[in-house]
Image (cartoon, rainbow, N blue to C red; front, side, top):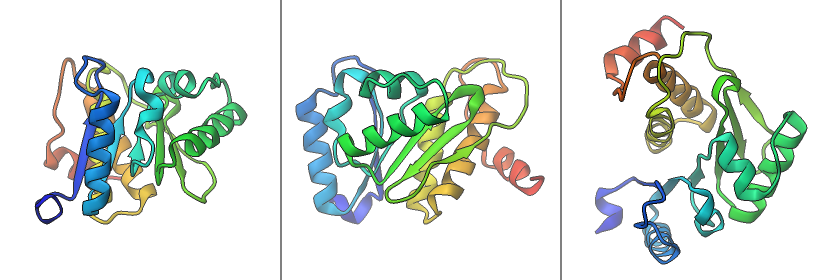
Length: 180
């Protein structure tokens, strides 16, 4: 039933106790068997439990702490990215880096850095959730990872430009895409 009605599953780990390693492994295993993509917004405590997911989207701090390599520059970002890909084996690793944009690692590809668009930031609440949602939407809709990452970056830009928790409306995103 899972494969006939679901294209992707997002595990957003807030560290509240629900996503324990046994649950994480169960969901990943069931989804992989059914051909359903699994995307994870991780917490450091369970970092290695996400092995085999389609996509993982840690922020810079989570990536550094999860793999034990401080990210300070492009060289350390590449080392950390390679280590995460070795440890977790995702198809896509997307490291969100605040004002430094997004670092995209695809299996077998070199690092692709996507810069942020200059704008005023009012509130970063929900930016990570927006990135994983838009990225997952893009991937399950058939976009190339680079295009999905650009979409996710634009969507996050809308969210951080508003105060408090905000949703991205389709019209807002279409307007930005048309004016890019």
